[in-house]
Image 1 (cartoon, rainbow over the protein chains, first blue to last red):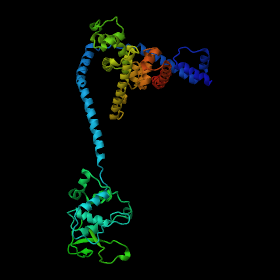
Image 2: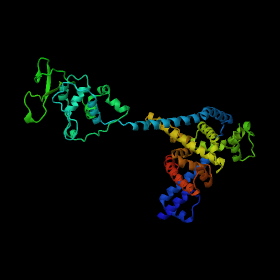
Image 3: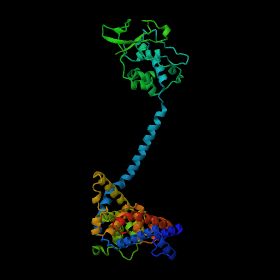
Image 4: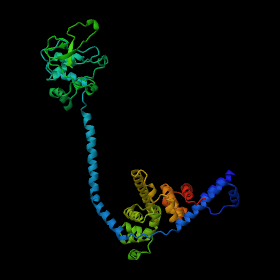
Length: 268
Length: 201
């Protein structure tokens, strides 16, 4: 039965007008096929009605098409002479783009560690170098945080005192200390010379010069180094009305009240 | 209107000869080609759009495109076949634009305008006019472009399969299969419309 249903369906879809006797007999007893047959007949009637519908005449004159053709030809004419110029322009642009891409490969920017070392070598020492500023390298060869603080004080003319800045500089974690040193290959070229320029170094942000993580400067508000005299002071300076937060470095056993390990990093 | 332009080109030349002359810029050959195929193209386009103004605009675009791209006509097929292919492509583009426009209209009106859309089945109105006829074209417009083209070419224009295969750039077997599928889809769209107007009772 299903075979005959499928056969009838194929027969109708192929557009046949007349059914074979076997299918006609099947049609008499199958409701599903009767429905398909009725739909097919209605479809045929609709087709005949649509075919019999008169199509209106197209009254579009040739003059209108011709005028449009002429107008389009005029509007496209400048493109004919502009095409070679456009090609040459594209070629020049490609050459310039390739040149701009290849040019920076000649002088690579030095690493941050190297920038620090160069800055230290090129800058004259301040006579009153603080005793806490350890400019030597540790076992791993990384410049210690104290040395970074001194370097910050050296290159930043706005810094009030090197010792305060050195002690106020947040210490890097041990993981930062154990990082291998940057290669010490001397760099040449205009970019390296510009990096050694003290004025350029002074203008750059301290975090960038010292190689501190960028997120510190990006996420935290900038703090102001307190310009205070280098005298011992208490936790709460009642004279100025400013409350200072003492920060102690070192192990708890080495901590002493009022020792020189304390540093004032800011006011709140 | 035809008489005004009749005789502008050489009527003894074939389409391909006229196309070759038109490619060299012969305006008379272009005009002759236009006069030969204006009405056949219009008939197919009108079947798809059901709007005289829109159909005339498309016919104009068809001939503009054809004359501007005559250098791409390689004479591997007949000029009329090539022209019909351009017409069908433009009809497809136009149908898509119309569909998008209609969707925007309905979205703006929050579907309140659907009842007054000219293609929407309105039993009262279609009973006064030709309900059967309107249901047919409503279902036709609901079909996807590739199905609608085949119904128009095969069932309304009664083109043979070989010609349709040339126009669509495919094989005869593929055209037969596609026509069967198009009819099946068309009947599926047509059935509820016919049932709504009592044609299938």
